[in-house]
Amino acid sequence: MKLDGKATAAKIKADLTKRVAALKERGVTPGLGTVLVGNDPGSQIYVAGKHRDCAEVGIASIRVDLPASASQADVEAAIDELNASPACTGYIVQLPLPKQLDTMALLERIDPAKDADGLHPVNLGRLVHMVDAPLPCTPHGIVLLLQEYGVPIKGADVVVVGRGITVGRSLGLLLTRRSENATVTLCHTGTHDLAAHVRRADIVVAAAGVPELIKRDMVKPGAAVLDVGVSRVDGKIAGDVALDVAEVAGHLTPNPGGVGPMTRALLLSNVVEAAERGLR
Ligand SMILES: Nc1nc(=O)c2c([nH]1)NC[C@@H]1CN(c3ccc(C(=O)N[C@@H](CCC(=O)O)C(=O)O)cc3)C=[N+]21
Image 1 (tube, rainbow, N blue to C red):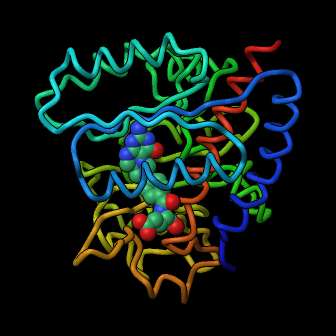
Image 2: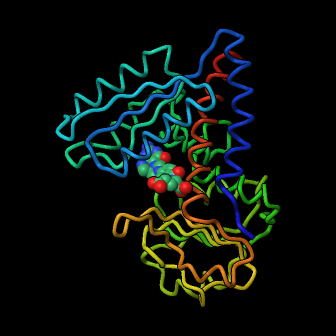
């Protein structure tokens, strides 16, 4: 069974479109800002996609593009401006940043109330404490996609491969909340026997950024497999999951068309929720 992220994202965007219209009737137009530093082709495609998504649901968008040579002070100034701008209800700083920049210091400078990625340390701390906050987009999208297709999460053995902040580490926090109640194993490059862990899993989330890391013989028949990989090989997107995993998986995300569109929809959702919170 295909876990159709594109179709599920379209449903989420239809709901957001109504909520944006309701906000506008109350005099508030949600606005998403993006800060893009440098000219990495992949990042430019993603950022352009986010602005297209905004237009689709009626969210205004504010685009700040800085040269690859931008200094820490240049990016700080862009962040300060978005923090102060009433037109911007949420924004992201596109990652990764050029290496002369201190990423952590810049992420900390974002107003947590405008953190559309849900990656500000204050909001990640709120996730640890399980209090209301914008959630990291990819992990939230993964949970909603599993729920949409009725894949049982409660009590499931979930193996997450990859401990990055944006996906693996945050997803473990989300799935172990009482409301989700999964048992999560977080695997990484230091894991001794990855195949043995993956083989036991009811749900496998591959977020390591290693093409074809998850092979057919590692997957328990019937398991749900989610491919978060966005490596580029010869200009084409290469996932972390080998194509023949489709022969054994019970549920599988296509890639593209799986987790990526969900990530983008949940980014819009954070922007709309921030605008709604502002009215409460
Ligand atoms: N601050 C920040 N926030 C991010 O959320 C963030 C980031 N930085 N840096 C880069 C990664 C990557 N990422 C993707 C989102 C959607 C697709 C997506 O929708 N992909 C389409 C295909 C698009 C194509 O063909 O290139 C799909 O899967 O169907 C891909 C990748 C967000 N990221």
